[in-house]
Length: 73
Image (tube, one colour):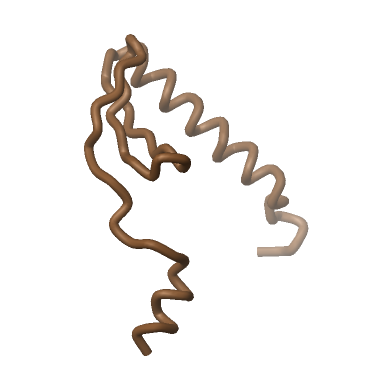
């Protein structure tokens, strides 16, 4: 494949964001709860169409992956 045939990074990011947006709209239309991660509370929720949230779990590990691996090694 020639270099001219590659898709630029900006285009890939735009397409990925559009795909996620379409999937979220589809789940709302089908009344399927979506899974949301809240960075502030570090909790994982099922969010329903009416806006209610049900806690599913919480963050299991603290710190970045590279920091955890460095401590174990």
